[in-house]
Image (cartoon, rainbow, N blue to C red):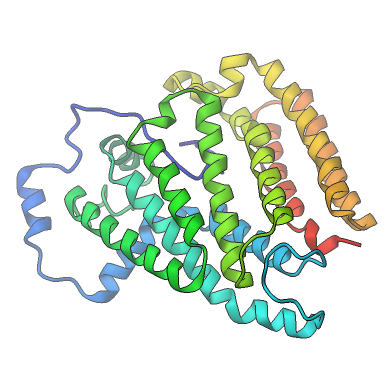
Length: 331
């Protein structure tokens, strides 16, 4: 996990097999034998699993789905009668369903990851408020919640949409965590993370629109996945020394800092032009995309130090948000 707060969806901690991840046997018994908690306690526990992903998953994916659903170009099979007010209210009325879909799938992903031994060890240091390091429940209880969350998510998706996206996301989660895809190299890890985020975009848009995605909708989602896969190493620039000390394999440490910065600048400028072109964006869309992208690229190439690299990462987050909003800036 990045010290800056990573944009990646599927976290994987460093495995430490010999560490006591729960504590003494007496503490574990106290957790298991604790009196039945109130529903509020259980809901707070589930919320804590997903707390750190609201700004990295729920907010950006909601923006993506809302702007795509309101695009002048039809991206799903949902009926469109051409009435802008009716379409707008239709999107608003289904917003709670979309948010529920995103959160349920995020809950599955987070429990699946945070219940792993290495994740508990690292969260004890970095995020001690999470349910497992704070001993709100045991790994065995987390596994039980995972089973419940999977069944609830699949049932919800069957009723309200996004079923195929949910199942595909669960496959990515299984590969990443249980098959240790996160340890298979930078590009495989980035591809799995991009694939997971594309599933969130797919399911959120399908649920919000009430229809299945058309080819152009899938094309836009694939483009956003490629953007993330080729530029998300912006998050590695501010913490090169920390990653080196922890032995993490990041783009700057694997290919060299100069190559990582150059590739970031080139790909950011490419996508800053390609995305407005894809949407035939207005002047405002072109200005926002290329303006933020060029600023980020210049700062990345100048090597001004950690403080400015943190600015580069924040600009990346803003830039991605602008790209997600381009469907609303279509001519």
